[in-house]
Length: 81
Image 1 (cartoon, rainbow, N blue to C red):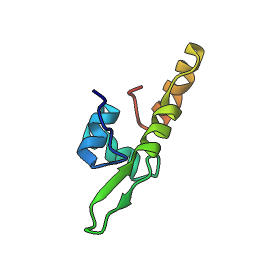
Image 2 (tube, one colour):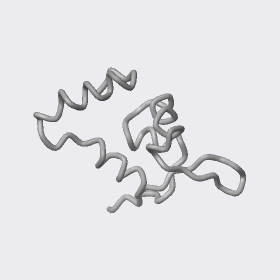
Image 3 (tube, helix red, strand yellow):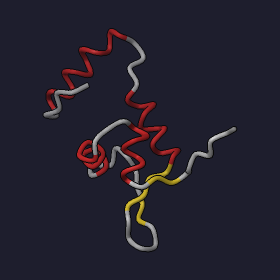
Image 4 (cartoon, rainbow, N blue to C red):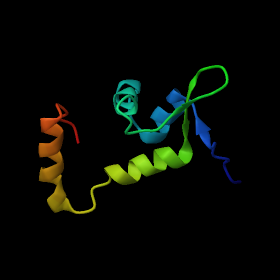
């Protein structure tokens, strides 16, 4: 049986999909790292394709990039990878 995946997520669903807390989600939403929109009732929603693009951009493609990423995040005040 195939599971149907939604194309639009609530913030809670987006957190589960991205495996992050609401604080982390909001921290990346506010500066525009994760695009969002407001539905007709004014509630925040996330599109699947935007969340997938965000995950792709966060992937480490080469282990030699890890120190570069850590240094960049340290400069931005973020210490977690």
